[in-house]
Image (cartoon, rainbow, N blue to C red; front, side):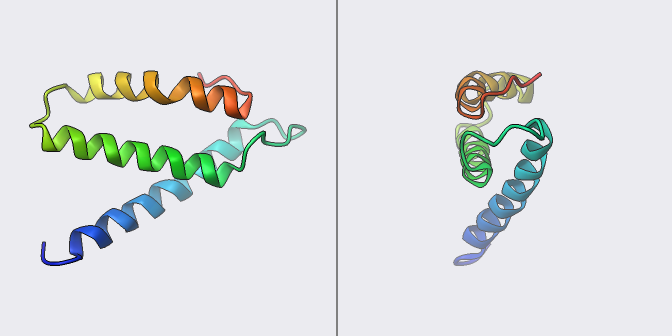
Amino acid sequence: MHGGSIDRLFKKSHQHMRRNIEQHLVTMIPAEQAPAAPLALVADYLSGAILSMLTWWLDNDMPYTPEQMDTLFQQLVRPGVETTLQIVIL
């Protein structure tokens, strides 16, 4: 890709994932419970973490399987998201 094309792709991917993650988070919060943190912030954090890990994985010649990367991602982010939003992710 030329010039800022990769940056635009990264930004668009981040925006798309952030919207989808936020929509998913909305379904995880009980209707009577106010989110303990802005869902847009949590979604932005998660989408950034996913893209960061994906970049690391590709830059390092994919030293782990996709399944292993998923496990690492879950271990890294799940406790913080569950604590922050006061939910349990199944």
